[in-house]
Length: 70
Image 1 (spheres, helix red, strand yellow):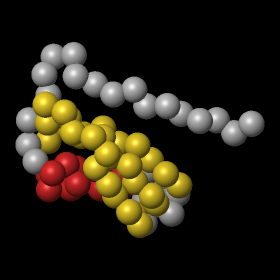
Image 2 (image 1 turned 135 degrees about the vertical axis):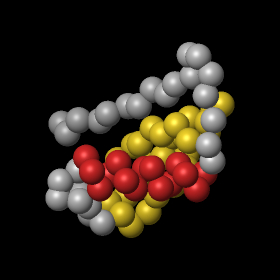
Image 3 (image 1 turned 90 degrees about the vertical axis):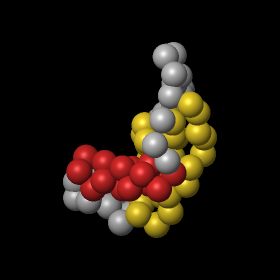
Image 4 (image 1 turned 60 degrees about the vertical axis):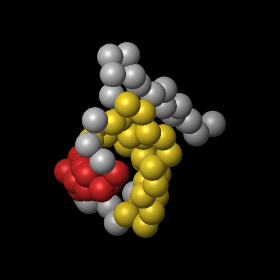
């Protein structure tokens, strides 16, 4: 199993999505599903890209920077 960091460009703006999955196809499907469930109204996804992939082991993770408007 792997931990994927994906970036999505959508009609609601950009999103960073962290997904645990057995393969890339499952990671894409899970990321799309999470966006449709957790962002209302469901955004149109224009691009979905895997940025990083790591083996899922204890301690594996990502730091996601959130930029705020000034």
